[in-house]
Length: 230
Length: 192
Image (cartoon, rainbow over all chains, first blue to last red; front, top):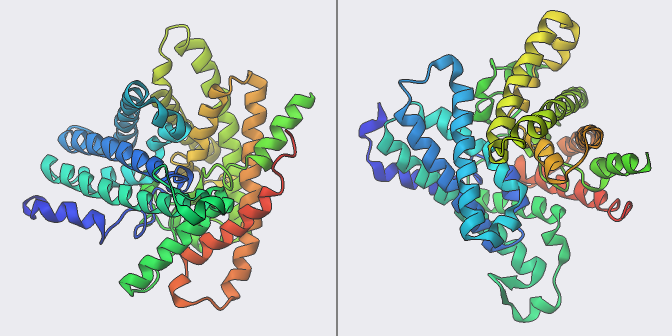
């Protein structure tokens, strides 16, 4: 059991080495959808971190009680409950953020990162380690979203966190806050991370082929192998 | 009738689920390598989206709203979708094995596809009627499939391209997706 691993390591690995968005390529939908502004990126990141922390703690606390066969529905219910909770909290305290995240707040439920960490980490490790893992992954996700949001907001709107940027503000490249710009920016950032890390490009996303790439597919009886052979 | 057509076409083209709402990016990038798997996944998604809408709509309006439990939407919807996918899989396996063979591998992946949950929530948010919801789900699914099929063609070209090492794999795919998304921007304003 990695329970006795230094807890600090569990936090730091999520930020760089196993960054959920840029390295493991999980949770692409919110990454692309809400990052038209840096502030939205932070909000989405923190909301996801909250859900991740809650679900990781509860799932790891219940990991001996939940029968293996019904673990997928059980995990989903736990995650969805936390999503409902954060929805209420945001609606009550930060209504502007609630409005700008919109439907994507609900869709945290099906974010691969949360499901993946529940399946890969929380269901196998102790409560404290799972909480640290969730914090690390959450920070990594938030940072990635913040970077995405900053790039898109600065180039696409000539603003940053609501502050106007002198020259760019008069000549915004609107494309960057449009969906197409989201794909483009994410591609560029991943390429940049590749270059920095000077490592081989990450394997193709394997959501539909081989379940190791998309832990959310854990619920299936390994359909990926067949899909890859087709 | 005209309203229905607008909902269908706007869900399919202007508000394409993949390219402008970013739902279902995972299968979009994962399964779009080959044309036949893209088609298979597309059909499976259309099927599940329509059925999920048909099931969640009565649940929301018949059970949750009268009892003031709308905030349970997320929990109930995702459970319904998960159960439904399981049910469809088992039923297809027993009843139409040939169809199961071609769609079966994609079904479990749909549980965690944002598009399925997204369309059910959107239908409620937009306060569509039952028929409108079904049409919206069908259009959304069709748009998903169109995007997947088009993109599988783009990716086949991409495989023969000489790409710098840093961009190989995911970055190149994402940038290609961005260009496809630009082309779909041409539809915007078509039905306003």
